[in-house]
Image (tube, rainbow, N blue to C red; front, side, top):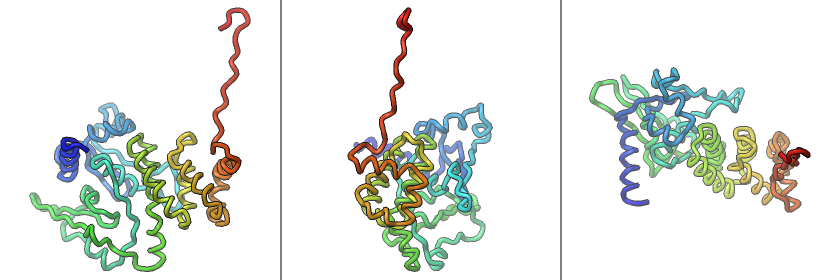
Length: 285
């Protein structure tokens, strides 16, 4: 990266952190992000319409993305953490996903002082997903609380440790899904690469079945950003088929058929059939 590019990115990040000149808000679940229309629209065609004057969102300066309900698991809704990482990417061209559960003692370090309101911009400065930042209501004074990036909180039991040991494979899949939905091509490439790296090291983790479902239920059939990694992982580690959770996920999707093709040395998906050309006998059209 050139010095000029680096300086520009730092300036962009500073605008986000300070909240100067913000003119739009993205709300999802517990988060409300104050952003700049020109920044998000330059990277996502999806937001061009709602940011325009012809839409209520553009006039109100706010769009609310429906957060996914863990109970019904509606794939059409968004994971707030994935949206947080997407917004972070808009300004930093990267994101760090951490899925660690913290102890009550650690959480207490980030309780807001009196008369405070949530300031979601502060969350992007942490290296893990647990804490959030706050700012005081008192005019002219801000107080933010961040985690120590060198010593992230440790899971408080073995179950939590297991859930945080998948290399954030599932979170990368969710970020990829958000990038596809909101047409952020650069984030798709980044999340796909992070997902592939996590899967290569954590393919035997219990969350691999969840990753399969996300890959096949939240992205269109012709987008292979996650699916190719899933197919290659299962093809390279056939012992995964002995896992009931993986087989269940595979049966719910097209995965079994794609892996079967690979077992016979064929591409995971067939080439689309080309319609036979029909011409008029008289004019040849």
